[in-house]
Length: 69
Image 1 (cartoon, helix red, strand yellow):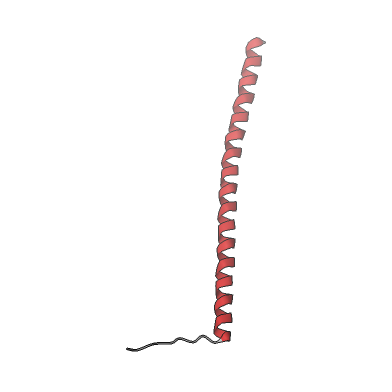
Image 2 (tube, rainbow, N blue to C red):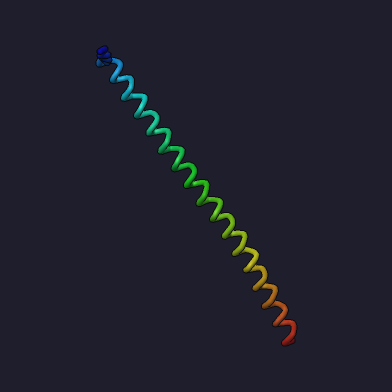
């Protein structure tokens, strides 16, 4: 029977911790960026819809006024 023992030095463990922290920070930033991008895209689409809707309402109002005149 063979037993393998792996020892990790304090320096290796600190490096592993730094790597894990860096990955977590990077993942957090990426997630936040994706959320901001999605919100921006959604907002842009809403603005396009609202702008076209407002223009349509303005045109309808103008048409109605002309009809009354």
